[in-house]
Length: 390
Image (cartoon, rainbow, N blue to C red; front, side):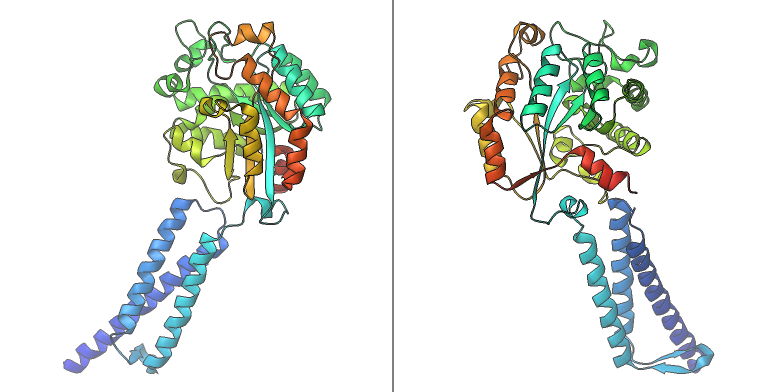
């Protein structure tokens, strides 16, 4: 009887060890071949991998000889110890590989220590002043990328320019808000279909909190899809998507819609950890290692203007770290039109936008970029290298 119990116990132990080792190597193999896993899935797999490995170690250390079934093969403890050490080494490599993801600059073909920068003008389409100032900054200055607000009154003007200049980098500044006091715009979608996106006058809500509190993800998707389709109808060579006032970052379901549209239309989307957190969304729940994530997104805020926007931008360029960087600006002429548009808004108002235009059209800006060995790139380049070639 004791012999039978001994044999059963030995076989049971051997089975458990083999299952643990098999599970370990299965999780390891799937981790190496599956590049599309989300962070959540990888975290779960690594957790299970650790459990399997620890289980194997605990069992292997409890007995020196294993007799496996009818084969009557004896595996000595020192051999099992060697096998375990080999497994442990592979386990360490797996964790290290997961931790060391390839940087955006390397994926684009640049050195890991390259300072990549997109200088990006927002809000094209808002006004004639915004359009012509942004075009000037792109044609004569350092600005090399921009995004267009499709629902705005001056959209047809900038859409025509973009159509006639397909070589330039124009994305869509997906719009869900209308923030100015008297100058307003509405959704492209019928009000009855997107009631959560509009106020009592059927304009977009003034701020992103109004969107978050009232709009469903289905309404957001319907409107944003309409904006993309309208831009395509006007012949714009769309290079990327981003979000006016980061409204799509304000709710997890909106982020899912945003990423879904990027995948569907084969467009890179602006993703930034800081602004996701600022809008109340945990970036780790939505960002995968294959996403094109900005390392540092710079945008002058009211506190930055106290010393002058020029000084803020000089300091930003001179202290830029290696990685994928983007500067967001808002270029416009400080004229009667823009003063009327931004009435009551000192921050991001007409004078602010003139300062943006002046600096990024200056020789000083170009000289600093050269002196600091900053490599300018565009969303168009990112799209061609990382999206179109998939």
